[in-house]
Amino acid sequence: MNIILIGAQGSGKGTQAQLLAERLGLAPCASGELLREEIANGTELGRAAKDYYDRGDLVPDDLVVGMILARVRDLDGAVGIILDGFPRTIPQARMLDEQLASLQQRIDAVIYLAVPREQLLDRLSHRYICRQNGHVWNTKTRPPALPGICDYDGSELYQRSDDAAEKVAHRLDIFFGETIHLLDYYDRQGKLFQVDGTASPEEVNARAVTRLMALNGAAISRTQEAASQ
Image 1 (cartoon, one colour):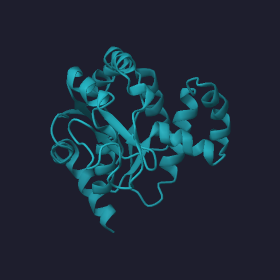
Image 2 (cartoon, rainbow, N blue to C red):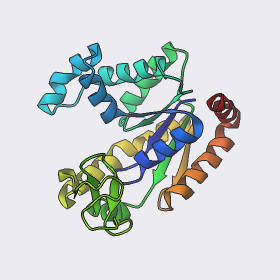
Image 3 (cartoon, rainbow, N blue to C red):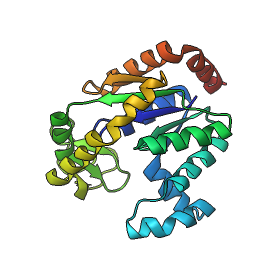
Image 4 (spheres, one colour):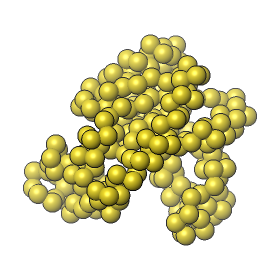
């Protein structure tokens, strides 16, 4: 089973991708991490993407889709993938559908984590990351026990440069102006459902799994059975 998570920055996609991956036996596939991994491993696709990445340019869609297909071919024990961060546009979604079909695969479900823009701005402006392992904290809603220090590994917390207020607003403009159109694309395929992303991560996860069962219960049951073997 293959799933896509759609949501603006700060909606909790990374957290939900990990929770759903663990629960359903899926392979997390965040496009940024996948790109960095391919480059670090020196794969053919990674070498082709490196020049774009080093210049700060967008990596061509065909290279990103190629990396996703490589992950689908080699799931390393997982029973599917959960995509976070790709596709961002309808042309990318069409390319992904076409290339997955060549492997007799498809996207089975698409989850939209709905969070109001004002709350996203608030979440991101208070978000801090630990330097050692990238654990995420929020000084307003989920502060660490010691200010500026990660509870898990004791490393320093820092705020990403792109979490500054003006940059956050620009990123949200892009999402609500462009990426949001993916909802119509997948809704027409009967694969989309929306989950209230303002609840706790555990509540969001429970609701997502419930909706997945309602949308594609047979596939979920097969996925859970395979994951338990």
